[in-house]
Image 1 (cartoon, rainbow, N blue to C red):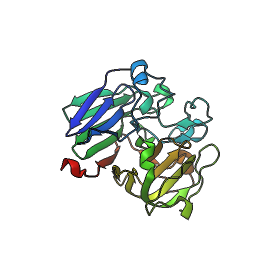
Image 2 (image 1 turned 180 degrees about the horizontal axis):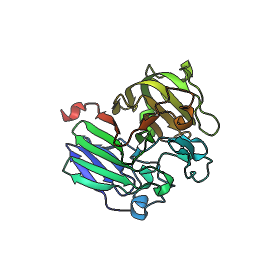
Image 3 (image 1 turned 90 degrees about the vertical axis):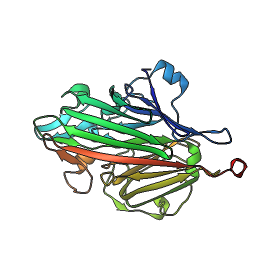
Length: 308
């Protein structure tokens, strides 16, 4: 794979792979007792060495979602000049997760504890018809990681748009999950969203509880931008998202597996649902207009009295 860059602050280290879709490939820290804690699922060493096909990305780390999140039905969406056809994801009938994480980004700035990566999209590249520029700022401090993502319309006509972040969390943090979201957009068999309903007790994490150890995919709306997850032995992660990220995707592929908690600006297939609803989060950016979103991951470990 292409060269990586590592940021450090205190005991925390974040590894970035700009050319691999602007990815964070690892976030880890060491404890006073000598343990290494992986706060995100780390990219395997074998993948680091051999790389990966852009449409078959590894389920690890965290990558930016631009210019849309999740699926667009049949890869078709409405634009100012009519309907556009996007490439379909291999094995599916729909477009998936934008083009940003499948394209190489450029490392623009780099210091010991922070970096900026950018991606400039030419119209039509990888099937997305509109020109845009994306910038992702990554800043590390002793308590966690801060991410800022900006996408700007570089073209001469309006561009449909969304954004978000796609982190993969180790299964250990599914022990105690908490977040408050008032609605759920039920997913069909092809993981496309339908009209929202109030969050039912089975899908409600307003009070801390374990994530069931089964396959699940839920699209939440009216999220308050805060979440917490904790391992049984104490390490915990808190998420704090900006107001632009009012939707949340919860996904677990099966028993014993990692899980994803993805703060995003719009619901799955918002590109088509927005024709009939105003609450999908889908945006239309005028020429020169930009949208921004931010995510903070704060990590904590229990104090070990042996090392006080």
